Length: 96
Image 1 (tube, rainbow, N blue to C red):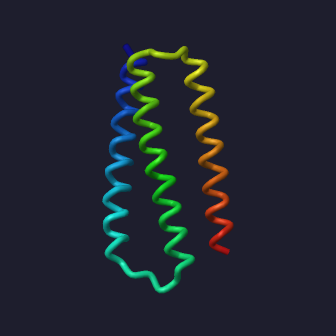
Image 2 (image 1 turned 30 degrees about the horizontal axis):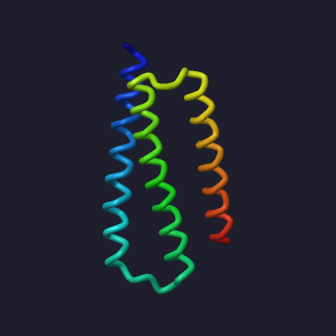
């Protein structure tokens, strides 16, 4: 029962992240950036957040419906977090 609750939490978290990222994209589309480099960094960060939201939703569905074993889910989660960390470090290096 607690595993299904964990899956529901991931689904809700993923949906909230996706909705917030889409609303941020709409607000940034109306905003005019003076620097093209800043605009690219904002769009990269928004795309990363959108992918994270979709991933958490899919991971929540996998956990909720118990498709894979918990160890495979943990490996998938760790791999995704490492990829997200690498991309966010690459984005922050681009700021300097």
